[in-house]
Each structure stands twice: as C-alpha cells, then as structure tokens.
Length: 67
Image 1 (cartoon, rainbow, N blue to C red):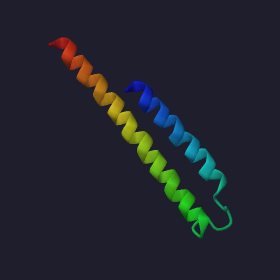
Image 2 (cartoon, rainbow, N blue to C red):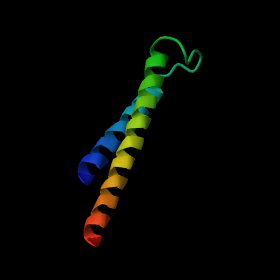
Image 3 (cartoon, rainbow, N blue to C red):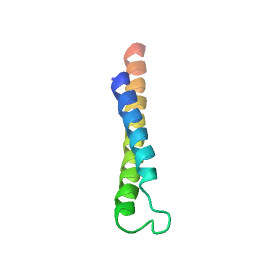
C-alpha cells in the first residue's frame, strides 16, 4: 500500500508541474488556464488524501501491534 500511495503522489506532482506550464499568466482565469488551475487543485487534494491514507494505515498497524 505504501508503494501505491508514493507512486500516486509522484504522478500528482508531475500533473501539477505540467499544469503550471499551461497557465497563461496574462489571463489566469480564462480558457485553458482555468482547466489547469482546477487540475492543480485536484492534484493537491489527491496528495492530501493520500497522505491521510498513509497516516491512517500507520496508526492501524500500531494499534494491531499493541494488541
């Protein structure tokens, strides 16, 4: 599970990097720039959720080892 979350996090970071290049700084809220901004936000949310998943798995393992 740890490998999958790391891989998905790396993919999300690559998507963020690509979409930053797609933003038109003269008009960031028009056309393709909006799509890029939405994708950046979605990737950040995915990273956040993946980190929560990793943390919850760590807590679950610690609780199992204590019992």
